[in-house]
Length: 145
Ligand code: FES
Image 1 (tube, helix red, strand yellow):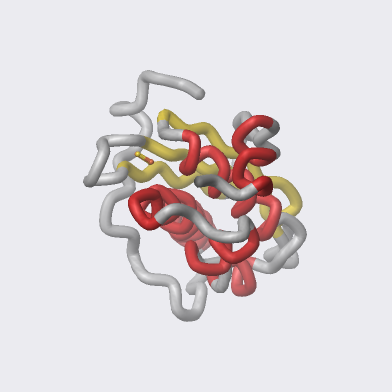
Image 2: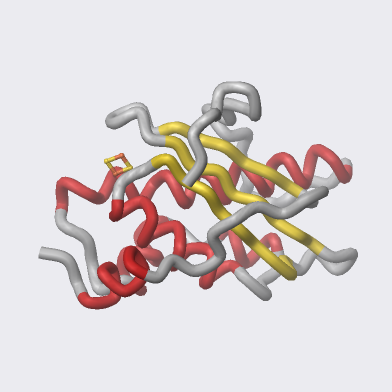
């Protein structure tokens, strides 16, 4: 039911952890299942994502999609990172079962929330980035991956 790539990223997730003093942090929740995702970015002065880490209190598909999403945005500009949609992540993973598609949205939304946080902190505008619906913030997350 899961592709080899999904299994690989689930069993060996890349970029798990957190970044002290991150340039941007985004935390989102999945309304369907209540799972939570947080993404940290280290972004340099040229707006290139130098490092990215994630933590999740989510299912295996959320782990795999976030792992792949962090690999796809690493080294990209903030503008390019916006183009890493859940569809692109699913394609990179050779697909997800239809009931798990909503899980892949967590990664995309967390990336957007972290970019928004970065833009807010630095007083810049990222073309095409909209205010995230549900950055649920630090205080509500107690569980760690
Ligand atoms: Fe919640 Fe997958 S079931 S993120």
